[in-house]
Length: 91
Picture 1: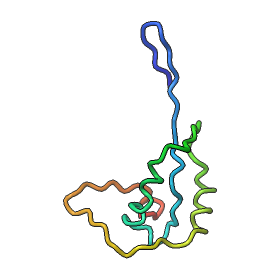
Picture 2: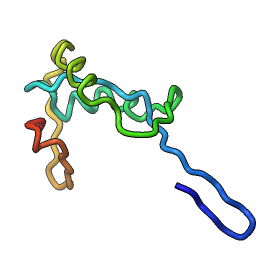
Picture 3: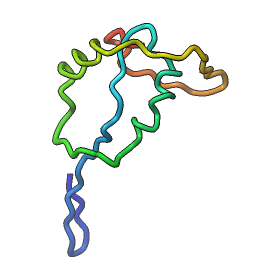
Picture 4: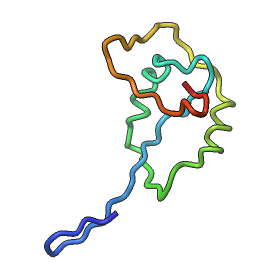
């Protein structure tokens, strides 16, 4: 994507945080995400991709991980929650 104005043209690029890979099983809860939130938002080791991540590779790798730890429940009462990936069974 390019931004053009007056006498300047600038190219934008995507930036992806290193993030956290989480096992997609019954232990993938809001608490599991909360425990990894800093890693998910850490851009100190960012990459600059030209397209989406290799999802098949990442999913295969995620299924090999250990289940998440932690029993404390995170509640979303009174908040708006956006869930994506539900079509693939990942909720």
